[in-house]
View (cartoon, helix red, strand yellow):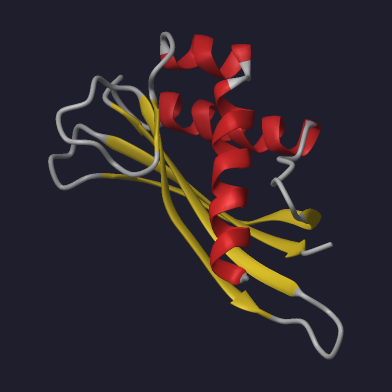
Length: 137
């Protein structure tokens, strides 16, 4: 069941972010939210890098804890644009949490936020790590 919960959560999270007009404007248009870092994609973009889950329920409980990593990539000079994208992702998910089909989102919280320059010293990457718990009906 945890695999299904993870795929449904990923689909709901992606749909939520794609539907955010303010985020789309920051990204410079549609089609810039990906399930992982794409090859040769136009910057800026978002990548949902990781969705990992593990069962945490007990007898009669079908709870799954998920770790979700979303990265904002930019080459606008410095980390400012990547951090603005990360801030919008966090706000968007807080305002309207994703609703995974066939599961109830029990909780979603930001565990970690960081930003760095890639090895090329030009590309900035802001990373958000979320913790979510889902429950099967």
